[in-house]
Structures are given as C-alpha cells and as structure tokens.
Length: 526
Image (cartoon, rainbow, N blue to C red; front, side, top):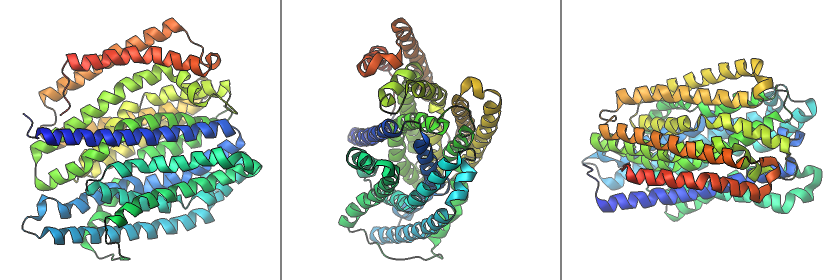
C-alpha cells in the first residue's frame, strides 16, 4: 500500500500537470520556431550553415555541462537541505546550501566564459571537424554564425544552475517555461525582422538565438532575486561541497554524452550523404522527435529527481523505489502510444509542420523517412532519461557513464556502416536509425543496472503495469495502422487541412481505445 497521503498525491499530480503544460507550451513554440526556419530557409545552404553552426555550441554545452550541472548540483545542494542534517540548524543549512550554489554558479560562468572565447577563436576549425563535407561557401558562413552563437553556452550554463536551485526549492513551473520565452523571442524575430534584413537575415537569426538564451537566464534570475536569494561573487575552489560536486562531474558528464554525441555523429555523417540538404533534414527530423520526447519525459524527470535525491539522503528506501517505478510507468504510458503515432503519421505530421515556403515536397518525404527511424528510439530515450536520474539520485554515477559510452559507440559504428552501405537506400534515415540503435543500447545497460541497484524496483504490480502498457500500445498502434491504410492519404498533396483531418482520424480513435484500456485494465502509476 502507498504511504503517500491523498492531498500530497493530489499536489504531486497537479505539479506534474502544470509542468507538463509548461513543457507542452515550450516545446510547441520550439516547433513553431522550427517551422519558421523551414519556411524561410528550407534546406538551402543558409539553412545547412545555420544548422551546423547552432548545433556546435549546444552540443558542447550538452557534452560538458547540461546533465553534469543538474546531476551534480541537485544532489549536493539537497544534501544540505535533506534529512541527512539531523540535529543541525535548518536556517544554517539553508545558508550553507545557498553559499555552495553561489560558488557553483560562478565556477560555471568562469568555465563557460573561457570556452566561449576558445569557440570564437577556433570557429572555422570546429566547423571543419564537425561537418567536413560542407561546401566551402557554406562552411565559411557557418563559421561566421558560430562566432556569434558560441557565447550561448555561458547563458545556458548559468540558466541550468538556476533551474537546479529553483527545482530544489520546490519551484517547478517557471524552470519549465524558460524555453517558451526564448522560443517566443526567436519566433518574433522571424515575424518582424528576418525578411526585412534580406541577405543578412541569417546573421540576425544568430543574434536572435544568442539573445533568446540570455533571456532564459534573466527569466530565472529575476524571481530568484525577488525570493532574496543571497547571490555573492564567491569562487572558493577549496569548498568541500564544490569539490564533491566536481568529483561527481566526470562520470556524470560522460553519462550525458549519448544525446549530444548522437547529434554530432548524425551531423558529421549526414554532411557526406548525397541527399540535398541532408544536414538540415537531419536537424528537422531530430527536432520533431526530441520535442515530442521532451514534452513527454522531462516534466516527470524534473519533478521526480529532487524528490529521489532527498529520499536517498534520508534513507527512505520504500518511497524511493515506489517513486522510481511511478516515474518509469508514467513516462512510458505517454511515450509508447505517441511513438506508434509517429511511425504511422510521419509524412502527415512532417507536412503539417514544414511543407510551406522554401520547404519542398521532396524535403518533406526525406524528413518523414528520417523521423520514422528516429522514432524507433523514443521509448529508449524516455527510459534513459528516467533511469539515469534514478542512478544520479542514488549517487551511482558510473553506470550511466558506461551506458552512455556504450550507446555512443554503437551509434558511431552503426552510422559509419549504414551510411557507407545503405546511404542510397535509407538516405538521412541511416543516421537517425543509428541514433535509435545507440539509444536502445544505453537503455538496456541502464535497465540491467537498475534491477541490481534499486531493491524492490521490479515488483509484481510494476511488471504487470509494463505488460499492460505494451499490450495497449500494440492494440492502439494496430488501429492507427489500419485506419491509415484505409485512408491511403498522399501527404504532400493533401494540403494542411487534409493532413490535419487524417491525423485526427487516425490518432483519436486509437487514443480513445488506449485510454479506455488504461482504465479497464486498472493500470496504476502511483
């Protein structure tokens, strides 16, 4: 039986729902931003240059900081505030935690600032390394754009640290909204300025991206100042908490490498394919898949991670296992049917989002094909994100590292083999399929470790819940495939409303059956 009171369950559900709503808005605006990009630049040389340039600073940040910041910062910050401080004055513990937060933030600002300078100085070399097959004109433009955008990592590193502070203080909604604000800023640029700048529009877009990421930091800094967070210009490399966090950093950093490395690997091999605009096609397909998985996964991850960290500190083993199970089941319950929908409706969905302006029918079909192969890895991405946070809350940092490196190795080898032997047949799909294979490799390693690391995680109810979810996904996927075959829609000629009607006709009946099945089979998530 659950030991969580009904009011607490209700508050938890409301918090997750509000985070999910914010995430939907953020990712939805991210999709609109991508649609604006596709309409304005299609898959031409400017789009290829911008995709290559924007990918590098974000991938560098993901490789070095993203999971490392939250994975190291949140457990250490919460160790001051959790049950492990029995007999200690809570106010003093809070002050010590905030002192550590200031030192950590300043360290991140210093490190990302140095990397920004290096990135600006060596922009042409980075472009040549990541996308060696780009034409010289495209590569030169990409290097110029990279110099403008590389300082994004400074603002993003600071913003991620503030996200960790706010989430640890039980403020979840605003951190979920920061992407919505930055995406809205870029969308406004497209609506108001891009066309007016003519040939200089792509440079203006790079500046807009930089300003958008600065806006993320400001959005979080203002409410923290209103909460009277005691920021100070401290940089103490001998601080025990900072040393503990930095000691955790290398394995956590390596454990976060799969997603950014898969993007860099995909971009690298896509640049050598014979498909026109392959780098941009890869970017658009990954955008759709990552936005969907982000909406469906990160709200649950961000809500459960601080709680799991506190439960681990206070020794609440039963609650820890229960919370981990609930997070896994809840995320899979959403991701699995959506994966089936993407596989059935990739062409209609891609046409709805991108088929306009400079984005052609051929671009639509190629992006849809790449998206189908990328969708195969969506459930694995979900499992990887959830289980990694369980491990980090457990202070077990080496298992996610090993899983990530194994997934990246499979991704790299698969991309090399598939692009060499199946490039003509699969097109950009060869690199998205490689990404999916890497995700599943990582997920399987984590699943094995989870069963060994968390006592009681594999309960009878948990196993039954997983079986019911997979059964309902097969049923709803079969319904979608059957309706789609009956409609025999041609996405590139159906038009916006025609594709919209087909998507609704295929997805809604299957969703109704799926939700009814959850109720009838009594699938429990708490």
